[in-house]
Amino acid sequence: MTQCTMAAMLLAVLVGWVLAADPGGPAPSTGPYGGAGPVLWYRQPAAKWEQALPIGNGRMGAMVFGGMADERIQFNEDTLWTGRPHEYQHEGAVKFLPRIRQLLQEMRQFEAEGKPKEAGAKQREAEDLAGKEFMSVPLHQKAYQPFGDLRIKFPGHEAAADYRRDLDLDTAVASVCYKVGDVTYLRQAFASHPDQALVLQVSADKPGKVSFTAKVDSPHKSAAARAAGGQLVLAGQVEEGGLKFEARVRILVQGGREEVPGVPRRRRHGLEQGLEDQFLGATPGRRPCPQDGHRSARGEHRAEHVRHAPAVPD
Image (cartoon, rainbow, N blue to C red; front, side, top):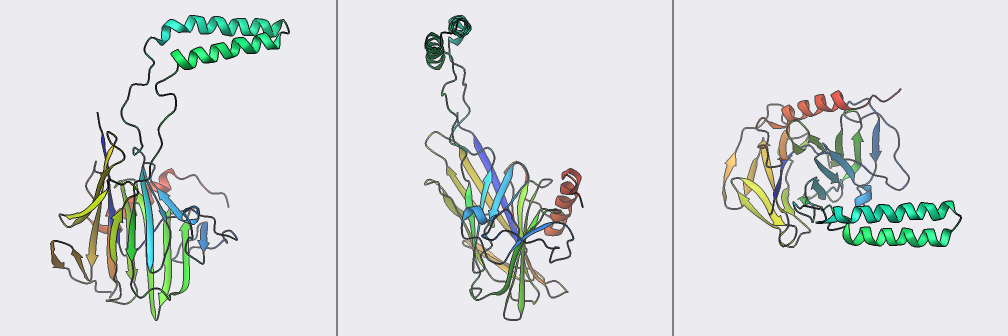
């Protein structure tokens, strides 16, 4: 029996994810975008996975590297592993339980008599019998697996200045902010529990300045990406006979346009404030991607986070 696990992903013009321990450690700060809670922040992108900033909602999670011209967001979903639905009981195990108990009782008797050599022999005999006839099949569990990577290229952002990435622990929103020329770019990401989606928003403080290409890939050899229904779809199988998986990336654009290979170009109206905004998201297949955009998803996410997050003492 095989089981399919799915994750969909939303992307926009504001980004987030957090975790990390850059060399030198984080410095305390108030949030750069109005937050007043505890914040982890860094002056350079993550150079390796352990330095990326993580977000999660209990079922889906991601690590945001915070690159300027090349962003990588590695994501996971909690049911994806090398195993499959399986009965672990050892057939006929109950027949050997009395003998295992007897051996352990004899071991304790030898210990009481001060005979460690004989006690050790009985313990080994009990362990060998249990391992062969009583323990689960297989004895060891299978391995949790990475799902995939969202990779975003921002042309012309190689020489960015005033770089900062951070994670606001009060809101569970990860941010990346920097300047290219006289334009300030902001990305924010979070994992919404109400919407069961990973959400990334990308924005600029001047119109017509946000431009990027996005793709998804996976370390699993069978995985392949395609465009379908105006979305990016990543599908594959962990191993032969194992779990199948699928992730979907949906881009919502305000004040610009999106192009998906094989899908006609669509245009949408810009925001009156002159802010170009693009929204990217993913949902796990059990629910559709949120339809009402980043603001609604973020508002629900923050309310849910505040409701369940432990209070941080002053």
